[in-house]
Image (cartoon, rainbow over all chains, first blue to last red; front, side, top):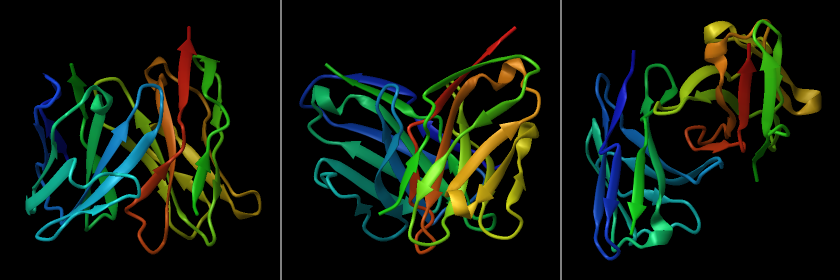
Length: 115
Length: 114
């Protein structure tokens, strides 16, 4: 089946540092990937759409300079949280669109804690 | 604007009993509808989806959902739950113009008792 991985699964960093999260589609190519954020006991909120070879499109209220997205290949999208602050602590989840099945496959998520 | 409502935050059900999770949506046209399950430490797994056609959709793990346009609902059902069905369930809606951009409901936590 289609598998999406995320790395790291959890990360703790100091305030002011930047953190990169990778999202990979392991056995299929994905021209489109999505990044979500999930707060404890809450739903997923779409942050941005990552398109291979072009700029990401961000949802309203999401700072594009804060959350840098790069989709350099058909199997990899990265989310970089720049100058992280404690309020950026959250669970970040990516998904990849499988074109042939019209289905999104989700990664297991990355727990970010900013001290 | 599209929206998704899952009225039940938490449901407790006995093993072997039936389960129904409610989902109501708001959308200008017929949306694409999904149910996902999230277990701790695992990514969201698609249970089933509705794009068009038969309004009763069969999914994995014995789940089914029925699209009712008149009620703007897409409720998820399972005739007999197993302890392994304990998880968080999310209903999601995608627009027909950009259905990949999903909007999720708040989720329903299902607890299964012996």
